[in-house]
Image 1 (cartoon, rainbow, N blue to C red):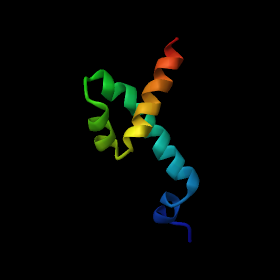
Image 2: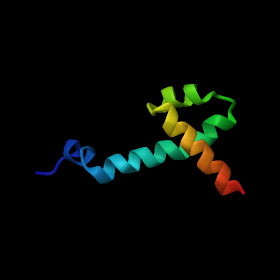
Image 3: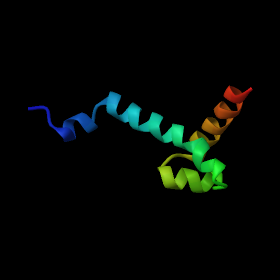
Length: 61
């Protein structure tokens, strides 16, 4: 049977979790957290946080 633990291992689930984390980046940066703090809080690489920050700036233009 396909259980919750099986679901959590799927690519779709993992991508959804990553997308949710990346959506939280601008909100946390707006709270004056550093890129490093955001990366640590969301369990992301600093490069991923920086990329999300840059993407947010481009979308605001």
